[in-house]
Image (cartoon, rainbow, N blue to C red; front, top):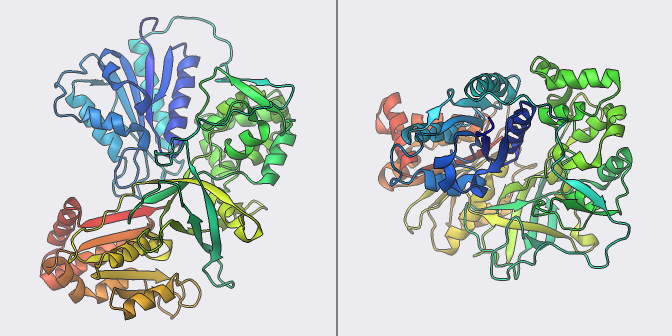
Amino acid sequence: MATHSLLVLYGSQTGTAQDTAERIGRQAQRRRVGVRVQALDSYNVANLISESLVVFVCATTGQGDPPDNMKNFWRFLFRKSLPAGSLCRLDCAVLGLGDSSYPKFNFVAKKLYKRLLQLGANALLPVGLADDQHDLGPDGVIDPWLISFWQKVLSLYPPPHLHLPGLPPRYVFQFLDDVPEKLMNLLPPDDQAPPSSVHPFPARMVSNERVTDPSHFQDVRLIEFDITGSNIQYGAGDVVMMRPCNITEDVEQFCQLLRLDPDCYFILTPTDVPACLPQPCSVRYLVEQFLDIAAVPRRSFFELLATFATNELERGKLAEFSSAQGQDELHSYCNRPRRTALEVLTDFPHTTAELSVNYLLDLFPEIQPRTFSIASSLLANPNRLQVLVAVVRYKTRLHKPRKGLCSNWLASLDPTQGEVCVPLWVKKGGLTFPQDLETPAIMVGPGTGVAPFRTAIQERIAQGKTANVLFFGCRSETKDFYCHLEWEEKVQAGHMTLFTAFSRDQEDKIYVQHRVKEQAKLLWDLIANKNAVFYIAGNSKQMPTGVCDALKEVFQQEGGVTDSQAQEMLDGMEKAGRFQSETWS
């Protein structure tokens, strides 16, 4: 392997693919294999023709889209002008990370694998399709795939037999004796450029209002931000990104466990530090705004933690959690009860006491930004941006209730107690709405799935488009019927048609799919005769499948087609952009 080195390229949206790529990088180092690990878009793709061995690790986002940090690579690789044999010297492997509850399961990995073969690359093994729904999570596929991968690689490229000590940290902390007089902030933003992940806009929170009845089990908030002077433009279907903070109690506990002074400042070497970490940086900023200490840790966390263990009992347990055989045990300790990384540190006190601060950025991933559908229109609410947020809280067998980091952080902010600013930026979403005045939009958005449709309806009405049909579902008309006064007003004005399904207000549960079936005549007329576009947004469990089945029944009943023809019609609508969905788990 002296002349060959392994290149691991990843496309990651939430950090899972990056974590897996870095894990492959550590495995390569342990096997004495030279390795580089990079995000696809930070790699010069023109160099791919001179690489000999590359692993691609990629997630699939939205409706079969590549992650943001591989979009440029994706466009380049699918150029028609690339010659068929241009990658004939490349040995490669593709590992996909996905969720089989989504219709476009691992679409990006499958498509990338086919394209690499078209360009003449030699695949060392079949594409790996890791699945969140597997009993053991993604590792149920990743582990055996990696065993096969290393067998293949080490037979083709035997490494030199060198003794390597433990893996060095990516960064070294240099603590400063005093608080620096002048703190270097992150680069000042370009006033003309729209806000981004590196330069978010500090939007002032205007209101944070609970929109579910106080007696309802679910706390849902309609939160409004003032974006005056931000250069932010958005339309129906777009999304807003926010990076949450860890709660003060967790930050203090973490600093105590690792004997860190939160008010101490440091710089990192080498200096290619993550873009959103200022230099110098305080320990408090690092723990509160950067390290994801409240997430459920991945297996790589236990692998690295095990290297610090000197206590025999703890070392044995961490070794088990790191092994392929111990994944069932790890799953029931960590994933099922949703135990956080911070809680794991308290469970392994001897090992935590041995932790070197230099490994913090190897051990804890960066807090990932969260995505929310925007729930307001700039045409109806200039300089304002609203989101509809379900606050995530639930019980597991652990004593302390589990809490979603971002939703609870947002819910805790109270603009009536003083000014509150939340750094945010906006991205194009997956839904697009008809430009034509006459084209009807049929929208199925139960629960918080209604958010993008609220934007669309406000925007379309402002543009004079009144062919708006909304199917909304929730548990109870009196407890979680979001924005009902607004809908009533718009229905009375003749600007929209509304069908509601309140699942718990009668003995038999009624869902949006039942209402879709009931409106077969209307829907058939809108779709077959008026070229309507049909949208679904909301939870990805049973609802999207139920609505699709109901729509196929509409086609069969009103169009007189067979089951397979109804499916073809639905597929045809999807290809033409007349059937669009945005679902989340």
